[in-house]
Image (cartoon, rainbow, N blue to C red):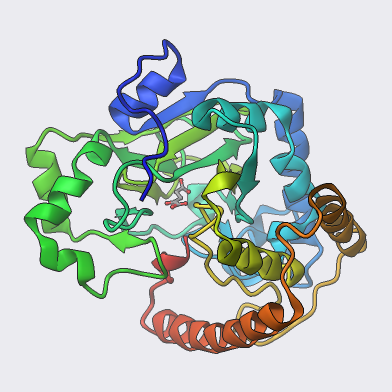
Length: 358
Ligand SMILES: O=C(O)CCC(=O)C(=O)O
């Protein structure tokens, strides 16, 4: 596969940090006021459900009052990926500019990614580390840089992103050294791989240190998907709020990738990280117990179709699925959907959340 970013160039900006340590922070990608606005939108979205969550009543800041989420605060169901505020955030100039600079092009495709609201430690159960990477060892070189826009103050004690610095430079060697691991079942949907504690030791012995990434409201955090990472729960009373996003050069997409992406878009489904190949099926209308529920939002339909129409006006048929192709993709997705529900239920019964989805 094609190498996607020059890794030997010195840029004298945040890209050098990304190359050296596997993660970076772009300060003030959006304004603090805008960050507050998005956080408010997220809260309002949570309040639209009928489970009883109210922002002004902290006794309702617990899972029984909230729609389904994973790992303490990741929301990727109910079509949240296609809420108007999510699309608004994805169109922020400061975010697009950063990814355009990273990839050297503004012809980018964006993921249909999730959001995160994690309540303070007194409302959130502690979770175990879930160190993982989001790029398959079959892909050589850098193919995916993940990110999120951070909306709340995020210090060392707050819930947030933990990275194992420098691991992006070693993951290829790890899979060369332990080739049998590249095929093990731990691979989740497509590009996701979860590490065992003993494997983390292999990286620690080679000098990779854990680092909790701290940030201010409005900052964009990016990390190389080969960098081992996970989210940590809060040890403080600070709420965490953010939107995940990931942009990839459009030229990497095959016609099949575009067709699949168009289907996800039309169905208001999600795709995480690599906006092209790493598409994971995220059903939009599941309740907390995985039964189907509709959760209509007034503006969603029109905004959604406006973007789709705009895309087709601008690009002709590019990215548009053919009827036959669409039909077969939909059928396939229905199969994936059933499988997803089955696995999700099993894992929830076992007391885990499905790490492969995020
Ligand atoms: O929420 C976070 O900081 C980590 C998210 C994550 O691990 C992922 O998106 O792959």
